[in-house]
Length: 199
Image (cartoon, rainbow, N blue to C red):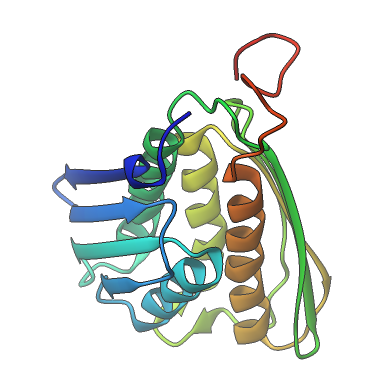
């Protein structure tokens, strides 16, 4: 079983479209220092770290003169890689997590299985094409990138909602809470929680 201090990683990723530096701690206190150049996205990632009790330092230089697509998607790739790395062999963790999060009129459910098999089921419907300077369609791209790079079975569903800001923020917070639950150690799990003996 890994120690609390052991579930930490640094990841760098540089392409012609983005240059990303990330420090990620799975067992943190909810502290973050995030600069992506996309204000609303920064707000969502800050909400994710705060409510999941993760620590994150993130600096992204992206081709925002094109649009925010590469910045958001590539950040999802790096975060997914960081989650996978910090989970390690997954011995002793609960594996599954679920949270239903209300934010005013919005109610979002999120279920996570840290199975090693990536899959995204996404059902969020926005009334606006943009929130601040971020296209709402990029939220799906972000969660897709996270799930496939982390090897997570991720289900995010909207039960109710009208305000696009509320829907998006509730989704990021619900994911944080579900991931926090799934990644916690459980004394009853002596190896990995699978009949296969590996996840």
